[in-house]
Image 1 (tube, rainbow over the protein chains, first blue to last red):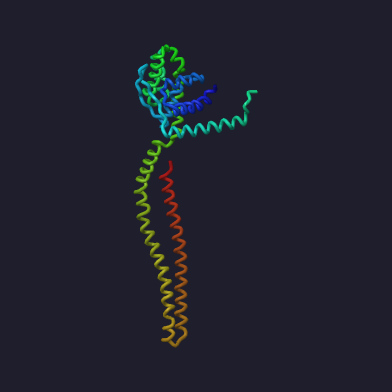
Image 2: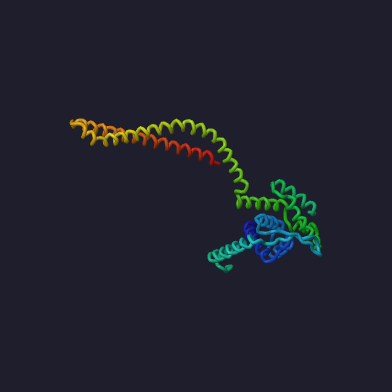
Length: 105
Length: 190
């Protein structure tokens, strides 16, 4: 997939996933890279920016298996932003679908 | 690439891209390695999955640029405010000399001019009001004519002076506004 195209979509994925439940970085990377082919390292910059923008907050949690985890939790501001981005994505999808249709041929 | 090699390379790339909070960023990748290792992955495998350090550094650079675009005025406005205050301080003594001293002279001249106009007006009216009593005292019709014409003359002078003062005041006021606008421009220009 085209890199720039992917970056915008990744931001939405991260927002939605953390909006649904708190994730730690490795877990998030793992889940996304199971479905999308990405350089895993490029996900952390997105997480950092969204955290700096106060859409996420982080907390550390010890775990019985493996090292301590840095969890990301969505903030109120993040929820609003996520909703907005999701709506834009849906609208955009519909508009593009109207242009290009649904069939592969 | 091993973990140490990856982190070292990433640090160098981040430094080259002048990204901030490098140690925080590296901590995220360290954690990623630890989680990967605890899941029985090799360091090489994890590094491969993460991608090139140069690509990652570029991504951080891009993200910080996005941040700057989204919040362009943080810190910048403080600078602007300081700048404006400095300019006000620079221009204040200048304004004092330019506005205050000539200001007093011009203001007194203007007041004098307007007073003359008003004096003409009232003396004209005043003389006119004496016309009936003058008419009673004197037999001659000429004294009435003289009083009326003097009054008219004075009223005319009042008109001329008033118009002249109006013109002068207008230009002085316009000049003052221009000067204040220039002041404002000087203070707010970036």
